[in-house]
Amino acid sequence: MKKFAISLLSASLLLSGCAGANATIKKDTAKEVIMTVGSTTITKEKEYNALKAGNIPQEVLQETRKIIYNQEVEVTDKIKKEANKQFESVKEMYGDEDIEEAIKSYGYESVDDYVMDYLVPSVQADKLIDKYIKENWKTIKKENKPTLAHIIPCDDEKNAKKALEDLKNGEEFASVYEKYASDEASISNEQIFVSTKSENLPTRLINTLYKSEPGVIDEVFTNDTESGAYVAVLDGKTLKDVKKDLKSSLQSDSNFSSTVLAYYMKKYNFIIHDQYVFDYFRANNPEYIINHPELAQKEEK
Image (cartoon, rainbow, N blue to C red; front, side):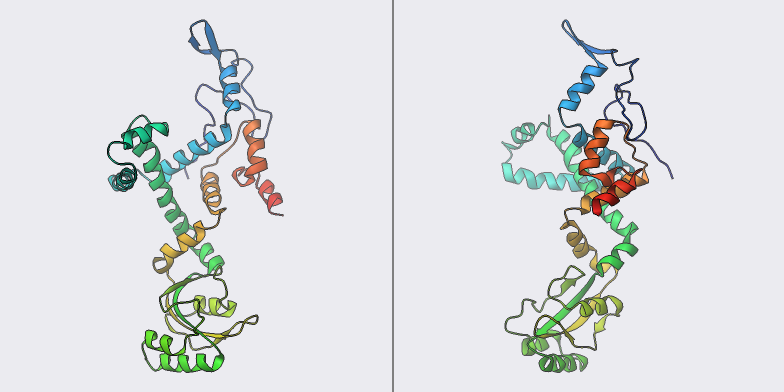
């Protein structure tokens, strides 16, 4: 596997030391002049201190993401086409006359810069999530137990058993739903996405759908804490079946994007060689310090 160390600042800043060490600009190069403005000279040390006054960790993350995107998701004509499609949607919001001014207000010099520096990485990020789900499908599937199903929430077991019998006899789902669904049902007669995050559904129903083959599930399900009963028809559970809804469900977790980034940081041997950045991530995102996994484990506890 090809690995690389991700540069934290720029080629002009030579960082030393191991991850978590007191790393700074090398003493023998700290006073080296990298630019002059009139009578003012800028050394490596001055530039580094100026950067520290800003938000280096966020710059690190931004550059890291770009590097990972470009390693994992090639910028093809298809990617560019999707980015341009997104731009057309943005342009509709601002109008043809105001779009360039709006883009410049966000710090981009031109439409092309905005598309290539913002929208293309945005499309790459979305494709990277697809790739992550595919590469980790076995684990994600086990943790989330995702399925697609039609479910009838009934008032009681008696009605649920009648509904199940009609379904087994081949009656259309919509017809059975209309006859036996509770008037207070929060589940419609449309297909729904079911996972371990599904609220109010019996755990046994979620588990049974996950373990079953498509078709009518020959069982009535009840909740220990609530009245009512459920019958279900499993529609699908392959990655192709559930991908769209699963992706949306995973992204609803605020920690998911960090999980994806940390996964690819580990793949590419992301190492921090600066104490300031190291301390920031240790306090805020220990999962990004991939060569010290114990820090993230302590945070979880």
